[in-house]
Amino acid sequence: MNSRILCLVLLLLLACQSIWGQRYSKRKIRKDLQELPGFENAYIGFTLVDPERSKPIFEQNAHKHMTPASTTKLFTVFGAMQHLPDTLPALEYIIKGDSLIFWSTGYPLTLHPDHPDSTVIQFLKASDKRLYYWVRPTKDSRFGPGWGWDDYPYYYGAEKSVFPLYGNSVRFILNNQNKTYSLQPYHQGFRVTTDSLNARRNRVVRDEWWNEFTIDFSDSDEPDTLLRSFHYNHALFTDLLAKEVGQPIERIALNKRPQYYQTLPGVPADSLYKWTLQPSDNLFAEQLLLMISGQMSDTLNTEKGIEASVNSWKQQTNNPEDLVWVDGSGLSRYNMFKPSEFIALLSLFREQRILPLMAQGGTSGTLQSRYGPYVYAKTGTLRHNHCLAGYIRTDKGKLLYFALMVNHFTAPTGTIRSSMGTMLEKIKSGY
Image 1 (cartoon, rainbow, N blue to C red):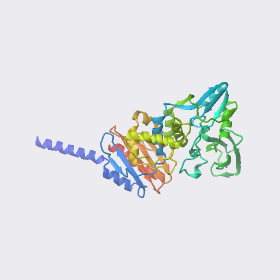
Image 2: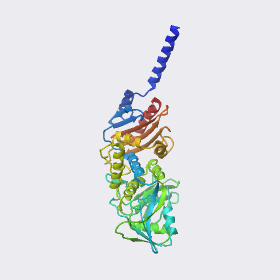
Image 3: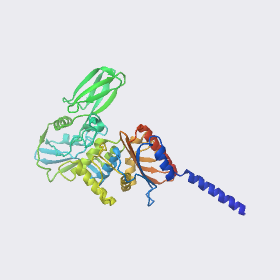
Image 4: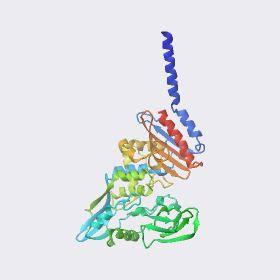
């Protein structure tokens, strides 16, 4: 009998040792952060948390400032959830006699090329009033502080504006075989020239200060579509909107927003948050901060949107420190967040709401082609910086919070992503 008990005890010990051997220990995590490809010379901050525990599972440089890139959008969406209504305001207006006077809320979806919303267009078309547009004041310039100056031609660097239209961009549809093109939208102020020589790939470039575009057709016979930002001005906006509405629109001046006005509802807020987080849309993120400020004053101002969001952050985390935060999208090199701040932020979201809005590994958004469906996270990439912050569903059913921020690496970004994937898989199976 004693020998049987001894054998059972030994078998149990061996089983426990096997299970423990599969666990992703702190020592193994630390070793991977030092030795996985691309991590050797990088500056890495990492925090892994089980919300059911009082202490983090692992921390490295958790309280050091890091460059977050587009993971900044998590803070932007948090601020929007605190200060914007469940249905976003698409337009504000008053009716005076035979006149309809309207102005913007910063709403970015009107005729957007990927998520076109015609709410504003249909509303103005249906009106039998004379249309007047008040250009709402803003303290923002077209770009955020710390943005790359050479991003201006591309949609990811589209200009912020009081009233975006078509995503402040032009869709070029190129016929390489016939060397012809079409534009959506078309405006007489868009000047387009074509290069007679075949290029290795299609290119559309723009003058920085004028809407003058040059097309280089490739030697391929396949058609192509390229999205390029246009240089925004109020006259261009009014022309484009009037063309869509089918009647004249006159700009007027107001001293301030009227006290009593009506609001035209747009899309559900979570739709825009999802379109901001999953494909990491920079224009949407920037406009969300402008929309937040528009709830509080006449003037659309990113700084005010950030200030309101930071105040909500402080109240809910009991953290007296300000965040080093300057734009909505993370394009700025001036943003700095700590891994611990991301963990605190992730704990403020409701799981049932935030998970469907985030990119899911192997399934959607910026994670569609990498990692497994157990990862729900926001990516962030600038040159020599790549970050990931979000949630991991483990094999045991736990939902862990993590922030993995890799700065100042010299390896290809794909190498960093691969090493991150190695760690995420070990966390999934180890906890």
